[in-house]
Length: 280
Ligand code: DGL
Image (cartoon, rainbow, N blue to C red; front, side, top):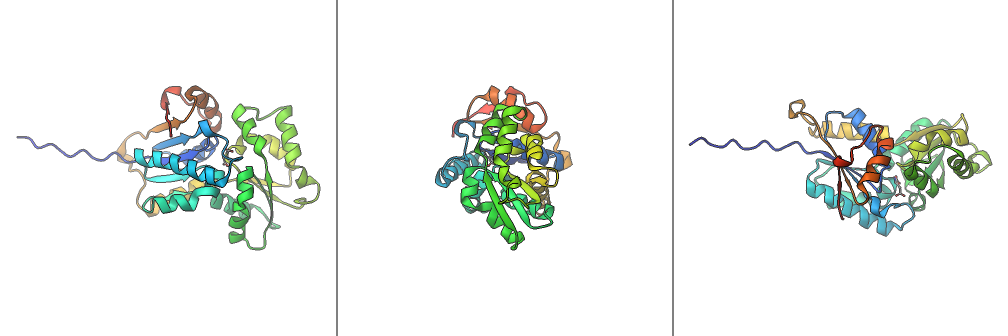
């Protein structure tokens, strides 16, 4: 009798999650750095925003989102949400000791330190990330003499999700939030880090409000570079012979809205058929 050949295990995707569509800005950088990889993205849209909630609640949500991805099979977890990275990264790393788990705050802090000449760094983030002091600590680890001014910009998340990334309302919000950059406090900051993965889509209004002398960075590219070297070091890169990579999405609410809004963050259209509605 002909013996059955064992099925080759399908190479696992990289798992990525955020409270909503913001983490798609990180997925965009990951796909640019690692185009041969498969990705499984989870947006916890039903419970967004995370940024105005307590650290305890965000950590609970983050563990549930990660459990869902781990259950489906991933080879690496990217926490593409600063708020969840600030509240839950050590807990996630402890829960899955075998799985590489990468957050966005350390890479964002490194990008900010590399961009700043005078060591005065402004951080725009959610209320929860600012309250947790995560960027201040991460920047101090890289550059102990740095002076960090963190500004909570909760409305930016709503504007980004709503697609109001330019025009009078976005401009007024950016001017109001960034006023300390022009008026003393963080007046001498020469680098500004977008410490929330929703904020890169607001870049033009943030640049206009910050002024041309401030260098603006986000954690997407540095996170992608870190994932790339980590997978290479652990021999986890997807073999070229594995065929075409897959790109799938999970959302905890309104699949059609996720697809419509998400395309702007990912930089490429998302088909509603590629998004699965899940309950955590
Ligand atoms: N995108 C998330 C972050 O990077 C926050 C958005 C939210 O408040 O849910 O912090």
